[in-house]
Length: 100
Image 1 (cartoon, rainbow, N blue to C red):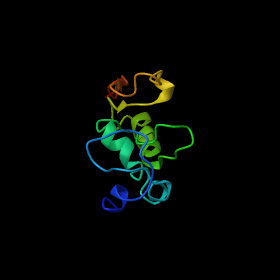
Image 2 (cartoon, one colour; image 1 turned 90 degrees about the vertical axis):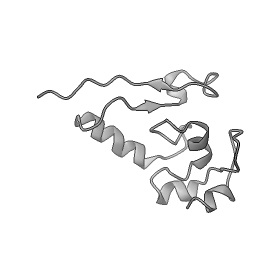
Image 3 (spheres, rainbow, N blue to C red; image 1 turned 120 degrees about the vertical axis):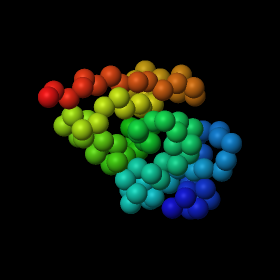
Image 4 (cartoon, one colour; image 1 turned 90 degrees about the horizontal axis):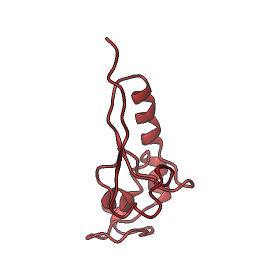
């Protein structure tokens, strides 16, 4: 997957490598195909940064978060009000610790 994601697809973000976004790879790899997004925001739990992009892996993480199995996910994206700041920002999403 990594080799293909560096050769075919779009480059919405300037990065220090040749990473690209591929919708085909994103669907079969649960979002990992948005490789250019991942290289631009490597700490983001979500690879899909636009509404039209499907990131099933992030959907799974959201369910795990709601179940209390994970917390403190970091995400980058337009719905966090980062349209103009996405070039440099990540938003930390606070999640309460699981009840014991």
